[in-house]
Length: 289
Image (cartoon, rainbow, N blue to C red; front, side, top):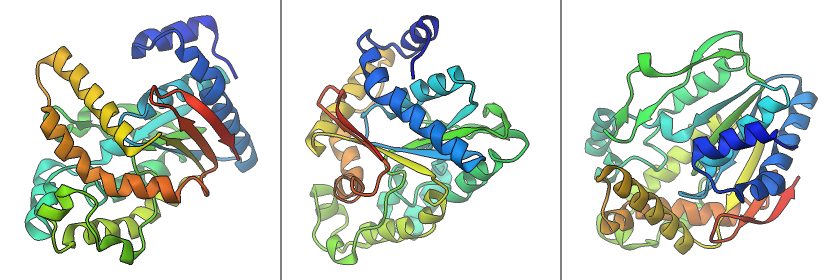
């Protein structure tokens, strides 16, 4: 599946992408769009494509590419990001006070409004207007609902993207030993990581159970993910003058490390589509189930 030259140019300009992104369209995003359309025709209803990948792996850009490809093929497509389901700052503060202080930081399971996600995904399969949630990372809080974009449902395909979309909980025995300094120092008794794992077991499995087709962007290593996240933050600082320090990023990504490593172990064998990326986010191989 290909984009017309005008649609390609519009996508590259809007997302600030290099010309060689066309290689990714041909190797990964075009075949994935075709695979999603096959599933849509088979199901005869709205389907949800889950797109999982660690921080900085190109999920958001890929979702935009998929949407453009699907629209070019005559299918309606909407994007829902797991990041836009984050609980607001007051809700996370209450969770931090009640359960564990580390829940004040957005990211891991337990810090999302899972019920809202279920409602939105279900609504996108029914006739009528649907508001898509938005989270404002600049203020670390949910945007006002009146500012959420509205789409007309039913939608042919929903692209549901996020760093732990489709993840399953770890075995309890795996939670015992900390994986980094954050867990060792801020969660010595394991209460936080157990609460995260319990949240992932339920109700996140209800949310992820709505996924019809699961695609995984697989990084070379977790160390590569750190480099990608630093690159993102450096660009943000250059553009806005704000953002986290490198030390702040190091601490921030430790909240994601355990589950990111577990996804890399658990998900490849069960995902419908697996794209192995190199350090430049280029697909080295793509397995289409």
